Image (cartoon, rainbow, N blue to C red; front, side, top):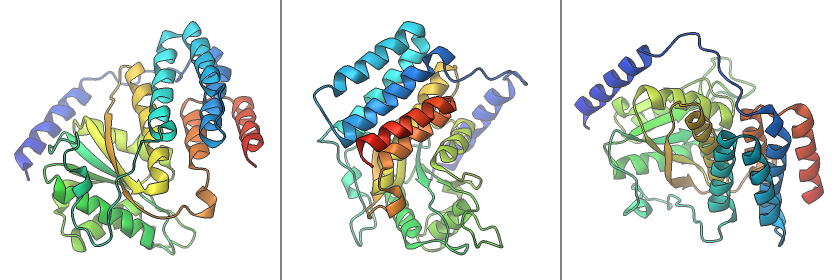
Length: 302
């Protein structure tokens, strides 16, 4: 492992962060005049995925045009969201790379654009704990992450997830348990593994891990999660990155995907709606807009 390169990257990142102004007011994510149009855009994207029709592109493009007419920065953000949604949700040729049963390396990622470098991280998203312990699904995500780590030995792993679950008196965290599993059961060196132990949702994952990514100067990521969660996770991270870029902040590029293949639990059947709702939360869309979105979703498919 290139430990020296990691130390240099960390020192540079700390110097940069120390030079930033303190106490600066954070601007709103978008121009408030664009809230309704963003709601229409997210609704149109869900519609195009769940019940596609010939008018979908026109509706999406109309919302994008309305957003651009108000704010160029909002237009860039909206276009990034729509472009990635079309790539991962609406592209019939988009495929997920999943860990085959019994595999120990991520062979399907051979030849991908993922750099084997400390500038890249595999971000491993957590899953709710059961009585304070990892579920089989979370272990599966960790095994997929370990396979990716073995195939790209110079990269980081970031395990993200807080103290979830209703019966967790010792306040075990997803991130902490994932790191222990990766080290003790998968043989990954602990120096490679960074943790966020506070995130409670996928949006929290993005917010917390972006702080880590910036601190370590990591410019590209691959999300590792369950198959039904991959597109959802990508959309939230993409929106966060595009919003940061608009603000002149830290942004990253999402490169490829890697998954633990499993069926979605009943509560997560509409992963696209979760993605749209969390993007709406990130953009701080008002209640009347998000309520209208949810009503529209129910009309698409109860």
